[in-house]
Each structure stands twice: as C-alpha cells, then as structure tokens.
Amino acid sequence: MKPCRIAVIGAGGWGTAMALVLAKKGHDVLIWARREEFCRQLRETRENSAYLPGVLLPARVEITNSITEAAKYGEVVVIATPTKAVRETAVALANHLRPQAVLVSLSKGLERNTYLRCSEVIAEVVGNADNVTALSGPNHAEEVARGIPSATVVAGYNLKTAQMIQDIFMTPKFRVYTNQDIIGVEIAGALKNIIALAAGICDGLGYGDNTKAALMARGLAEIARLGIRMGAQPMTFAGLAGIGDLIVTCTSKHSRNWRTGYALGKGEKLEDILARTGMVVEGVATTETAIQLAEKYEVDMPIATALGEVLFAGKEPKDAVNDLMLRDKAQESDGSNSD
Image 1: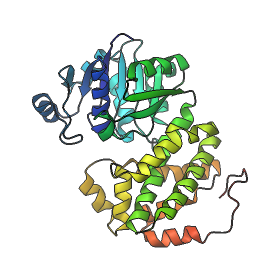
Image 2: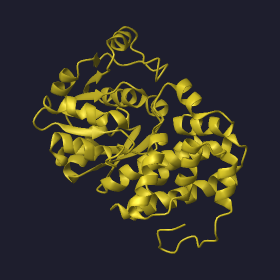
Image 3: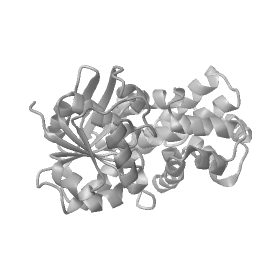
C-alpha cells in the first residue's frame, strides 16, 4: 500500500508508539500535543521522555500543537487521548477533517454518563460511522515502540475501512487482524482495566498465581456477560481484544492499572496513587461505569462491584477478596447473567 499522511492526536506513550510504527513503515506522520512547551521539547530532543523514554522519533515525524493543522493533515486520523477527552477532541477535529478521512480510536474506556464506547462518541460527533474504527489488543507502548513482535485487532462499522487500516498499520513486527465486532472489541478493551486493577490488588496483598488465574478467568466471564448483553459476539472475548489484552494488562508491570491496584493492595490511598502517577488510570472511571451498566442490563459483575467498594467506598481490599470468596455457591457456566 502506498504511504499516506497520518495525524496522531495525543502524544502519550501509546500515541507516540503508533507514530513510530507508522513512520517506520514509510508513512508521513504528524503528532498533535496539547502543550506548546511539550511540542518544543519533542522537536528538539526527538524523545518523549515523559511517556516513552529512550525511544527516538524518526525525522519524518512532525509535531504540532494546532489541532486544526493536524485535522487537515491526516488522510487517517488516530485519536490516542484518554477516554474523558475523546468527545472534546472529536469536536475540535470535526469541522477541519478531510472529507474522506478515516478515524482510528486507540482509547480504551466508556464515556461517563452516556455509556458510549469511544468509537460511538467519535461517530456521533463526525457523523460518519463507516469511516470510524477502533484498534485494541495486548499492546504495551513500551514494547511496540521498540519493535518487539506484537499483534492487535482493528474493528470497524465498515469491514473495508477496517481492512484499509489493517494494511496501513501492519508491519513485520506489528501484526494486525480485523474483526467486525466493534462492540465486543471496545467493551473488552475497556473492561479489562477493571480486572487489571483487581489483579494488582491481589499481587499487592501477596496472593499467588492461583488467585490471579481465578480472578482473570472469572473476570473475563463477567466482561463477556455484559458485552454479550450489549450486542457483542462471544468469540471476541476469546481473541486478542479479550483474553489477549486481559492477560497482558493483568500480568505486566508496564500496566498503569496493574500498578495502581498493586499500590492499593499495599495499603496506599487511591488519591495519593493517582496524584503520584500523574497520568490517567482508565480502569478507575470504567469501574464506576461498568457497575452502572451491569445494573442497567441486569448482569451480575461481582468483581467490578467489589472493586467499586474498594475504590469509592473505602472498603479494605482484603475484606473485598474475602467477600468474593464467600459468596453463594454457583455453577461455573449455566448461560445465565449471574455469577
């Protein structure tokens, strides 16, 4: 496929990693960063020392803090902002996009209050769902940026659009699959952060491999229960966006959600952890939204509910684990919405 012009909106670790992948493939890339001082630093040092230290940006990657310039530049526009900024970002882009620009959401979360997935937010704002896709999978920025073999999945409302993004993003070190189940891909990508927080808590408490394996398996079950009620396909949760992303986010110290959970398990307070981290921990807001969605769709999500009590009601992590273990007896899989 011939090279194209790609705008990456967001200069965090994941946005920067994607810019590197695309530039190394020969595409012309423009990164948008909100702060002019940060843009100046990126231009001068060619290194995103705040979010992806030790990796240099190729010369063909340009940097701007004008979102209008970025919107007009991109034949493909990659949105790599935190979930809470997706709507604001889409609004800022909307009136300046090229007529046939394709948008790729890298954000993994659900919009608060509306419960919309990020691709839904973008499509609602720009008014053309056929040109909107979502990319998700077991992809730590630190590894993708360094060329460590990785795989991901791109889903779209239009299969041809997803296949086009597959061609644009695929490299010998970054394998891209397509999936027509955009609901499942985004629900899996958002909700696995909840289970990663819980996995970190278990590790912080000093529990073992048995505990984490059980947590991940039952966590995947409740993610799938909710996702299927929302219209997702069951097999999506057995793929890269489901179990693949769940494994990497629950087991890697690269995971911001795992690290936050680990600190909670060690007895730190959430507000102190978030202040120290200085970055968005998507699983915190997603936990609240998932609990609300579970009530709306009448789906039992005991892990998310227990985590919510720890995050928002001050429950001791060890007490939450004990309560989960002492719930009423259940059959592992009976096709119901309860656990």
